[in-house]
Each structure stands twice: as C-alpha cells, then as structure tokens.
Length: 301
Length: 243
Image 1 (spheres, rainbow over the protein chains, first blue to last red):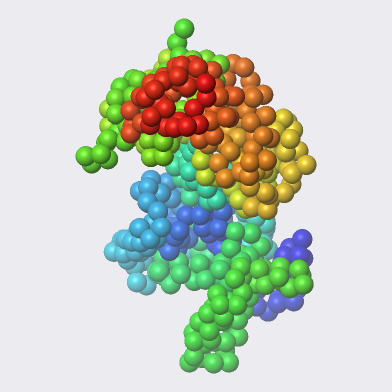
Image 2: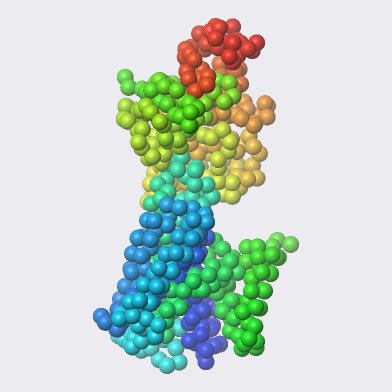
C-alpha cells in the first residue's frame, strides 16, 4: 500500500516537478519488468533496454504515422516489445550464464544500431520527433505541467504491478521460481522449462515495452539512448540497489537511485557519476539484497 | 501384458567406455524390483537413461508400451515416469508444501485452482507423515525428512512408474525405517524400481532383483535366486549373502 500512497502523495508534494516524477514511475515499471525476467525467472540479461527502446519507438512511430490515441499506442508498444522478446528469446534462452549475458548484450546492441541506421523512420541520431498524443479516452488532455502524464503513468504502473503480482502468485509464477531454484528438478517433475522461460521473457519484454511507450508518450520524444547499453546497465543497477526478486525492490531502487542521481548531478555536476558508483559498491559490499535486504536485517534485530 | 517400463538393447558409450552395455530390462506393472550392483556399476546412469537425463547411444525405451526413447525428460515425467535422486535435489529455499505443490501443479496443470493444488499437496504430505512440516523451509529440515520430501515430490505426480535412487542414502540407520515404511505403502499398481545398497532393505522390499555389473546385467531373479547365485556372491554380496 505504501508505494501507492507515496505515488498519490507525490502528485501534490512534487507538483512543480511532475515530469521528473513521471520518469521515476516509468523507471519503476521498467525495473519491475526486469525483476520478472532476472529476479524471478533467473534469466541473466544486460540487454533489457532492447524492449524498453522497442516499446518507445513503437509508441512514437505509431503516434506519428498511425494514431494519436495513447492507450492503443501502449498496446502497440507492449505488443512490439513482446514480439521482439519471443524472437530473441528463442535464441537467447537456449544458453545459460555468461553466454546468455553476452547474447542479450549483443542483441540489444544490434537493435540499437538498427534504429540508428533506420533514420527514415526512427529519426536516427536526432531522435524521433513530432509525437502528438490525444487526450486519454478523449477526456484527459496532456498538460504542460505533466499532471495528466503523471497520473497516467501512475495508473499504468498500478496495472502493471497488479498483473505482475497476480502472475507471480499463480502456479505459473511459482513454477518460474522453481526453475530458478532448481531447473533439473523442474524437468524431472515434468515442467516444459524452455516454454515457461520464453513466456516469462516475453511478458517481461511487453512490460518493458509499455514503460518505453509511456516515456515516448509523456515526453513526446524518443532518443537513441532508450536502446543504449547504459540504459540496460542502469536498470540492473537500480534493481540490485533496491532488492532483486521481490517486486518492491524496483519501487525503492528506482525512486532512490533517480532522486540521488538528480541531487548529485545538481550539487556535483562533474563527479556525480563517481558518487553513484560509490553508492553501488557500498550496496554490493554491505547491503546484499539491496535496500530492502538492509531493511529486513534491521527489522530482524 | 505390456511391461510398465522396458529397455531394449540400451547402451551408452562415453568415448571408448561403455557405461551401459546392451541392457535388456523390463519392469512389470505393480513390480517391486531392486537394482543392485557394486559402486560404479552404472545404476544411476541406467536410471538417468530411463528418465531421459542422458541420451542413449543405442537401444529403445518403452513406457507402458510407447516408445519414449526420443521423448524429453519433462515429457516422460508427464507421461507417468517419476524418479527420486540419490543426492537431494529439492527446492531448498521453499517450504515443504511449496516443494510438493510445484509437482502437483505440473501434474494437474497450471490452470488448476490454487486451493485445489494446496489441498492435494497437503494430502500427499499427510500420507508421508510430513504434515507438521508443511510450512518449514526445506533447508531447515533434518536430512531424513528431506529424503521423504524427495519421495513426496515424485509421488505428487501420481506416476505409473517410480524409480527410487537410494532413497535412504545418507540417512542415519535409525531413521531409514520411516522411509521404508513409506515405500512399502506405495500404491499396489505402481511399478517401483529401487536402487539400494543395504541388502536387508533390498531383500525386505524386492520381489525381483536385477544385478548390474560394469554396465551390464549380470543376472536377474527372485531374491532367493540372487542370494544363491555364486557369481553374485563373488562380485557383490560377499559374506553378507542371505541364504
């Protein structure tokens, strides 16, 4: 309940910084999608931005060329990312460990380069511009203060979180945990492991795509960085930072990381990256399980 | 009557080394059969071949008359071939109930109502005397009870064939009785093959015994025949032979 009270409270507390707050919500959804793939299904990935970027471009291109409707745009974003997830998953999920990591990385890099070359549709280096979005369900117009955008992101995040919770509590979600914990035994009790992982990977891709779609719609711009290695790496850092494999790690990780980054960049414009790095090193050394893990240990005392 | 499980000319070569050599083997419905042999005879390899963990170099495997030689491990399990592992192969971070529920869910299908799955998992636990440990995390369970969870997971799938790989391995002598009580109460229609080193238990359980030596079947017969076989005495039973 706490994240949602905070989310609603944020609307009033940060009313002058709602576009930034919306970015946090989008990053939370992106991190949640990674938590399904990495935290629950145990698929090692350093290329999750492939789906985020696919969703962003899909929603952007859809808005420019097809329709300004935001909701169908999100469906297109999620669908396109899921499709990319299925196709890449068929190859990536045949491998494990380091090979898997390198393949996800290679695949995301390929996609980023493809987006760069296909500048006639993606805008290439200049980014995709001219995205216009109609009012949501014809009623709620996106305003220049980002109020509608923030609430839109909050509602979509809520829906994403809810579906993920239902999914993870279902026998399907439990079987993913089983696969992560002991794949040999899961095969021995008859679980079609490859198919399960492919479904999980594609759902994770779809959620990441929706997050990307939200970004395109609320900022009305898609830059090449949505597909970048930095974006893939950053989201892993955020999840590790918050606590992996436990849903709320995505919330706390994204919020703390982005606010810290914002504050550090303001107070120390030259070396803020150093401080982010230092915080991460400290997290890995002294707070395994991330911030949530730290809270657990403190509670148990 | 077709056998529950049959191996026809089953072989496995690792390079020049044959770990299974032209094995002809059959397990009847409702069988209580033991697979014995000295260390390194290839007993676990044979079970791994039967369950699909290892792909054979030659030969065929039939489950209830159907050829499953090219069927994957998971698909064999779904067709009713269950096994336990010599070394615990559980979900240590999950509770006993969750361990068994995973197996029930695979058996009943993922769209079965959650409550039905939990009830069925509880029923399996009750049959094995694990009911009081349902919410205990497996890692924190005594080893003997973990061995019971191994069996519970296998039984949750209501298999027609059950392969037990040293079910009491690593369990202190005093506690192994609980495990064999469970094995003796298995459904009469289920075909059970057990690998076991403890000869007292083998002779108490088995109605037929297969002796495997260096990847080949040396002899198969009733316990009395096996105990009287001079070759078996020589390679395996030694002075512990039963008369």
